[in-house]
Image (cartoon, rainbow, N blue to C red; front, side, top):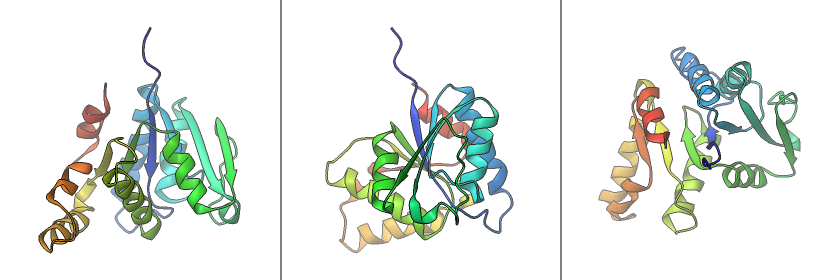
Length: 182
């Protein structure tokens, strides 16, 4: 009996950002998730990189699971035609449901919300609440300042060097797909 397909939680921006090169990466990630038969778990919005990943996954026949808090349904233009949609009361519940329904976390470019999501799952891993892999998709070097900040935190003695091993930067989608493939 083969193992169940992977569920990939994708945290990313609800905006496309100024660098147009991130949009095709988001689309390609969604298409690759579907092509592998994996499930996309995401924030249920239809805007920004978040919407790009979901539309591509769904357009390629992928299984899409969206989670959105009530207060963001209009702002993030909830995508209601996904395979499964869960509406939560709070952002914390959203993150928790997305995380608990996934086998791995992939972080694409994004803003404060994406950083919050990354640091929360990283902290959970640091304190031993999970051992799921966390990947920073460093397309166009977007995450280099964050990686430098983590190094700074370690150098200043606010985290152990073991923090580096709790997440993995990947340069492109090929490296990410290789890392995720069983």
